[in-house]
Image (cartoon, rainbow, N blue to C red; front, side, top):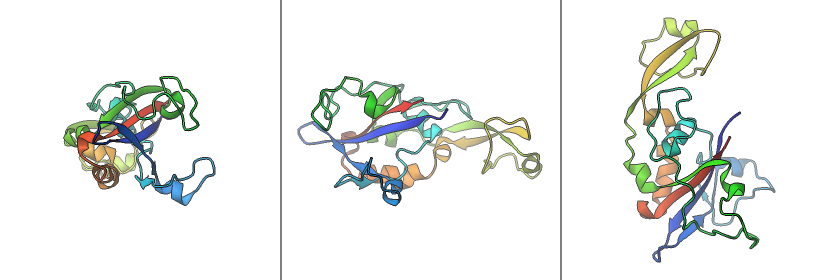
Length: 198
């Protein structure tokens, strides 16, 4: 079974209060849904809620060591922040439980600031493992990360290669997500609040 992230962006105002920042992805634009319409004044942050186990590992040790050595997380899950915006009531004004399961998934609830993302050591070297075809191995230099591999297979060969954490999480984190978050304010005043489902 796969694991997905449930994420909210929040910004802190000059009074110290956190506010939810509505966001949408390109998928929401391309495939509009009456069940999750794009909110008014919502910003485009493409890929933020994409299934990316390496990014989950960086955020809060989620699905770590799936196809590589352990990626050092920014922090172990911290739970939801005590000053989470809208705590206690939902959009209809109904009282909610303190765990917000309906919004943040089943487990590993946490939060990180944009400053923590910026300060993270993205150039750390990690050993990756995967199964590739015999044909690939015959022409492989032993260093270049395979463009495609399987976590497990009864065919081909398991190989190892080095990569940076930055290379493992993907370019969209640095080309789309972080630049968009930087536009929202001081990095200490912008945070992601999130959890995961199985």
